[in-house]
Length: 144
Image 1 (cartoon, rainbow, N blue to C red):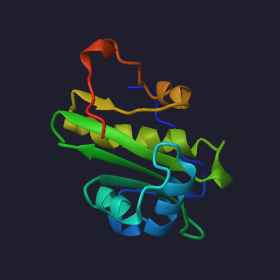
Image 2 (cartoon, rainbow, N blue to C red; image 1 turned 135 degrees about the vertical axis):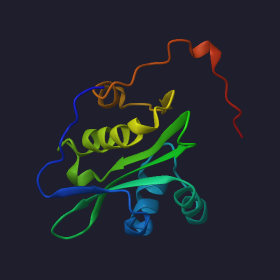
Image 3 (cartoon, rainbow, N blue to C red; image 1 turned 45 degrees about the horizontal axis):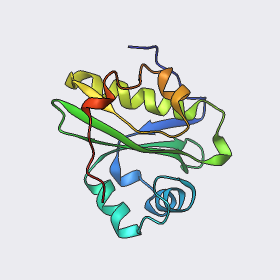
Image 4 (tube, rainbow, N blue to C red; image 1 turned 30 degrees about the vertical axis):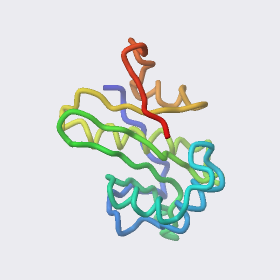
């Protein structure tokens, strides 16, 4: 595993689903995330309910500043998705620390793989040990 990246002082990560600011997460994803533009609120709520959720919070205000979720069987596989960092705190290594915390949280499960898809953040994920698929020709998708 790669080294863990620490959050800047004044921020904390939690997997407590009750702390997720659903209004904020929905707004971020449905209006500012290329992969989720226009996602309905009800669909986002179902996604959160069926996932392991990670939030980053300002320790003074309690405001959520970043989000990620994982779909996993906790035995063989995980899909990391909906990673989003509020524009106001980008460039502070919050996203890298968040993904590192997700990776470290999943490590005890000894999963065979954690997958993700990204259009533009390869460098962030590579710092944490993610690599391009060695055999992309072996993967298929059913897209609706």
